[in-house]
Amino acid sequence: MNSRIPAVAVLVACLVFLFGSESYTASFILLALGATETDAGYDDRHRVAAVTVAVVAVLAVTAVSDISDAVAVSAVTAVAVGEAVTYPSGGKRSVDSFTAPFYILGGGGAGAVAGFAAGMDAAVGVTVGFFAALTTVTARSLGTSLWLTVVVASVGAWAGSVVGATASAPVLVVAVVGVAGLAGGANLADLMTVSGASAGALLSYVVLVAGGVGWFVVLGTFVVTGAVTTAYGRDEKTEMGLAEHTEGRGFENVAANGVVALTSAIVYAAETDPTIEIAAGFAFVGCMATAAADTASSEIGTVAGEPRLVTTLERVPPGTDGGVSWQGEVVTVVAVAVVGATAYLAGVVPVSGAVAGAFAGLVGAHVDSVLGATVEGRYLGNSGVNLSACTTGALVASSFVLF
Image (cartoon, rainbow, N blue to C red; front, side, top):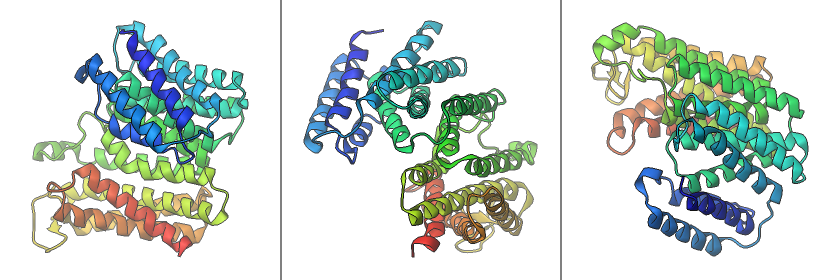
């Protein structure tokens, strides 16, 4: 491994924490600057140039940091130890299904210990360390270069410090072992790729730690709904050439359906205004209802209905973007009702939140269909459409609280 690469990574992480403003603008600018950078695509001169641009950006937009030094220590330690315990497996610069668990547990555990040694509460240290490790594994599974990985880990660690301690340190450790195990099982069962499983583990841990068990149950309801409906009529879908995610769902799919849910969970944990907390819960349910309805209706409607284009009602072949059928509409209603009821029974939202979330899911799922018929393939890909729909569902649900 080139010795200059870790030095660059540490430099970038330190700059983020030394000069980052309270809006953390620097972290996100660095992410934007390096979003496509990989080890294979950049030589040392490019790396130096990218870091130089990043440094200029940091100095230009930030002033004085209010982030604890312990957070930086935890993030950098998580990456350093994670790389150390996985690199000997073959000198790979990205994680795979074998090395990911070692990276999560080794890097996250070391980050937690380092954070505690630097002055953090033990439970906060566990949250910060494993947020950093899970974020890092997701980045590395996509082939992200090491300097950008440290920046990503820093953002993950910051998010962990915002969430703080929501349970005791041992419980938080058990939780990460559990979600990592579930993600690994999904990968081994070919339900998710390595990047999808890594992103799924990150999403699950954030939702579980920031939102609580009830939030995790709602997320699980969406996952189970997606798995069951995807398996429905798989042979027929394959014969028709309409089977999707044959190698498992990847990062893009998890991110498109999960980024709004993850954000809602962090806002819920960090916000002290009761109104915003309630709105975040409503938004989470609206997002999950949209994702469940869209996935279920698409998978069932593909083989069980005679679709019509949502914008013109003309008959279209199965699998056409924006196609809807009465069978798919029934499945949509059932899916949003199941998510809403689960959210209420799990204590995530009151009855009004369950109803608002289910309604928002209907709206979001139909926005997905309209976007599929009008802009998908031209201006947006499938992931962009899914993200737009989930955002719509979250906004509609939260509007019942905010307006």
